Length: 328
Image 1: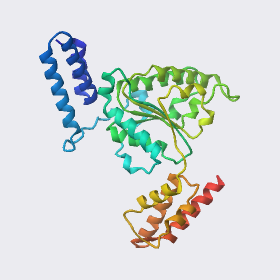
Image 2 (image 1 turned 90 degrees about the horizontal axis):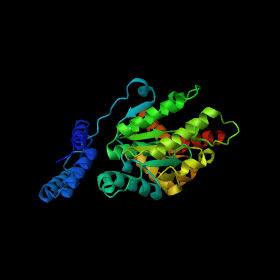
Image 3 (image 1 turned 180 degrees about the vertical axis):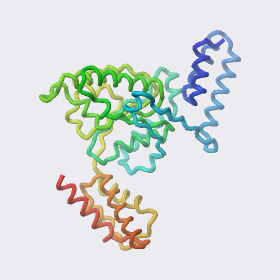
């Protein structure tokens, strides 16, 4: 028979609608019955588990979302929660980055199978690169693809001037990581992950970084932990080996700029568009800058009751963004 702990875990996962945990516990129960020599029961349990997995993978079966648990008390000031609907095709990315994100998604969709072999999926990610290149959006896409809530750590509430308080708050966040499966994003991570040898470093930040290193290494949850930074050069060296994967984002190449422009303008009629010329004009801009320029062109067309966007309509906002970038 199943142990009391397994039965409690089974009921808890059912109440929380955590299908992945439910199937994992069920698989453990099947393995336990097999060890006891109850081969027929174990086989029946495995058959039911396999049938459940097949139904969930079927396109006809609607994906049941994991409900968002609103953080309460002090935790509500530390985590901002959302339920992203973005999917990987919504992003324009270099093939190398898209392949790595796809691999992470596949591993987490097969998390029960991977853990049954004593392995762990990639779940601690460090995203580095210039602003506006898709790091934060990638966290939203991973949450959307996996049907998980996205919890963004509020750094302004996390970091305080009082000794020991920041580390205590960090512990609360990692307790939530263990209790509620989700994607957790530490944006602007360099604010707590900077090198401990820096001249302007203070003792409290060193203690926070040491605490983070210990907590992320000890974490064995099914949650995804993502840290993102625009300044990887100032991160502490010890951080890099704590992450399963370091994904480097960059400014878009000309082919990607053209793909992004076409994607953003897909719903509008276009006339006299010279994509190569626009790509040259947008060279050096981030995905965010180019997206904003496209939105400016679309808004101008709407305001002026035009359904067609021309090369000229895009050239102006792209030029303005480039001037703004050069002044930064």
